Image 1 (cartoon, rainbow, N blue to C red):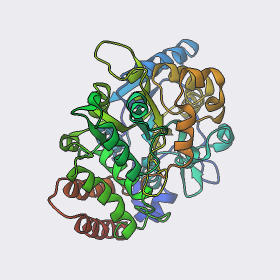
Image 2: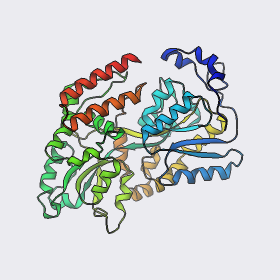
Image 3: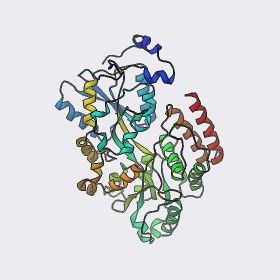
Length: 434
């Protein structure tokens, strides 16, 4: 595919200034009288997403290509790191290149990409949105319009050692942070638990830290930003949430080296028998269920809702949605491919290859799937009660600020109170700059 030059679009681009103009102008090819894209053109397209470690996406694309030899899809795999994915997608959009067609956006990027008109508003009447879980559908919307089609979701869960809790006389997984710490104390008195740590999540300075910070704040009754994007982190509720993490590092509930953990670090330690509890995504369940000599938890763990301050906590809502690049060609093919990729047929298939969170309600109720993936009912509850990360125009700046201040508090270079005060000021300045 060729790349369009910026000069060819300078005339149209000069007419768009500021956020209000961005909402009304921008690239996107032919439009109807109402300004909606017509989605014309058929032929080859690209699908752009992070690295496909399971191979499931390429298998799906191969299935499409076999059925549509004149409208083949090329898979463009970006780095695993979400920040790097976002950066490359933005670079493509800013140069108005047609090299990227269908984008797998992190669910939290919708507002940013829609506000800039980097992606087209989609014809929502053409998609089975009513069959999907409502919180997932909402992640694809911006100012009343659908800009990203739900493809996969994600909800955090608490993995726990059933064998150790049972031996310690604990009948149910903890619903609160205090219960989790008390349960850990009982478990660690067992000879089998000698040297184990209590709990871990994702605390390295990357997007996972934003997720874990937001979950702590939400699970203590606070919010990071309100529905309008205004920050509310310098509050007693937010402080109680951050204090839970900070104090857990101080008292040993969370091991010190967890400040370097991403998802796989925690999964490996839990699987190796080093943790009683672990916050992670559903992808980890089948990996930890595989029986081998190095796996100490297969058959001895389950998943529960995340605990909170006074009761069950609130997960951050994860997942990826499908968006259509405004500067792409062959948009009719792209819309059909998006329908195919987000269909129940394909979600059922990918669930068997890369277990996660389906978008369709029916898949959580399917007896065969629930038997194969026992975590599905818990995962559905996690999603239904999940809270989106800040849905803001400049998400990249917001998450960077959160990571900086949360990491400073976790590592002891500043207090929780000062970190939240500084974060509130930074987020307020960013919101004013929009």
